[in-house]
Length: 606
Image (tube, rainbow, N blue to C red; front, side, top):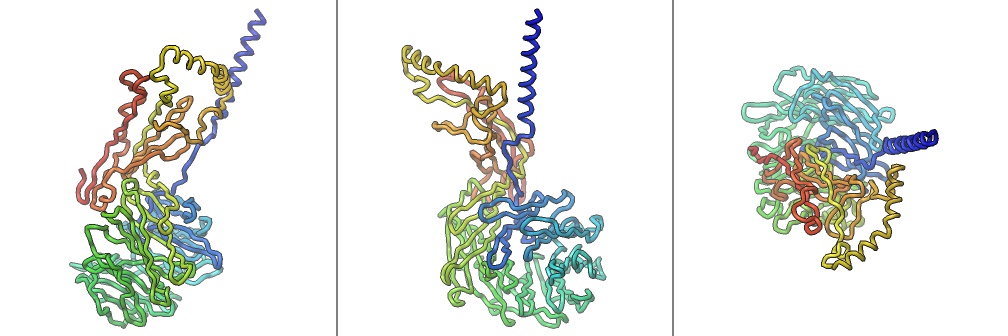
């Protein structure tokens, strides 16, 4: 009797030990994890992705962006990996960022309440300065309105900053301290400043004054040393579309210029001086309906669009404005989408201009890069085309690029694209390099779907075989039963699943029946719906995307058709267990998932 009690106690002790070991082996284990940065805010140059190069002879490039997840971060163009990211608090919404040398500066909060600077290579926070309380900040839309950052000289290795906040206050920040501050005397006026331009002689604060039918440009000049007002003036102008209708040019060793388009499709420009005594001028061909800021103000270059859609690269030199290059075939057409224009640099800071569009007839993305300084100043144009999976990624919403010129007649470009589904892609010339599915940061519905067991092929199932053949096959299968039983006992007792399908390795199958469950059913499909109208099927064992599709019209998405899934409205209506008929004949059921969404048009929701 005593021996039986000891045997039972020993068995219970062994079982308890196994239970504890199994539990402890699962603690803290992460099978996989994806580091996301979020969907870039590409609607404004204040937050959209941009290339930036640092270093001297040996340079290093980064792609910097602010995202819908309220994150500021950097990616490496080489393979798309995340270099660093800074997550802002929900109430501290990012307004804009600016880059200079090894520093990235950002404004966040109402009216740009908080200034931060980061090391561009590591993401280390260098400075955090509260310029005003969030309660006193203006609530503007777009939220970057009335904010700006301009870099000045360096003090003790860090750049001086001139910061515009709330649309009427300029702060000069030196080594983290405010040296001087200027606030518009009439804060209640209709003038809202939105841009700063820094020269050794003057600081130009440029904004818009609201009139009855349009906007009027307004400029105030300040002393860089003290912040005292030098001059202020309303510029004779009539602007329809606000911030998108004017830009500033500041090429070194040249006077700065203010360029804008009038309501009557007239292009004008004004040389800026501290006393604001100059009069507006216009080029010979002045009929342009739209102006595009390329980020090439340091080279006095920008793009203007004629009423028919034709794009021209313009430059201002020695007080004259002229067309540098016309993009042939850029006029509006039913065969192509409207062109996207962007500016970029090489490692020598030479300027390049790119145009990108989608061809409905060829089902290709085409882009061309123009370098005005190549071929002895005659300029070189290079073009590339590639197949873009519009039914997987939607439409292209933004482009940024940099370039290199191995010789005076060749251009190699790296183009980073942001799509309507939230993905970020990089192409070198016409070759894809990497793709980040940042739409996964906006998941609003999710379901786990059980996978079916692996189907045996016809020879394994013995289709058409007789009784003798089936008996022979089952005897062959049974000879390895003892090995399977030993492995099963070991896995159950120790918690080790190395002999089963690994949680970090995709299941491989020689059949074309799709993914199948592992031994214990841990491997499943994770169905994800995002706020950008895309559905993903993800392997839970390794986090890899097995399939995806968009809810919409692909390349026709620019017409305004978009389907956005409702939050949490995804349902599994059929599982692998819902079998009809003989499973040996028909196999397991194919799971089905229903997603409820909203079709969003340009002006209405259905």
